[in-house]
Amino acid sequence: MHTATKPLEALIQELPPVLRSEVRDFVEFLLAKRERPTPHRLRQDWAEALKDDHRSTTSVELQHHALDWRTE
Image 1 (cartoon, rainbow, N blue to C red):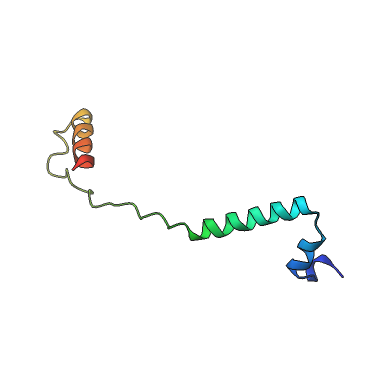
Image 2: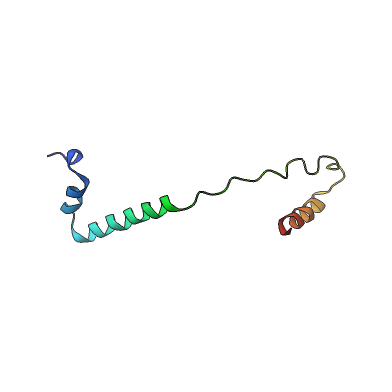
């Protein structure tokens, strides 16, 4: 029987114990990866926050504003 038509369980049974252990580890990794929460979407509510005075704000001042906004 060609390996592509064999059930996965039968193929795993043909492996030596050390490799079966690796298969188990990989399957557990895949399951854990699937259960991880998806990352939150990037917030963009800050867009155009400085639209009125962006020309008068220096990059250093903007860095200070950004630090203040992150700690609010």
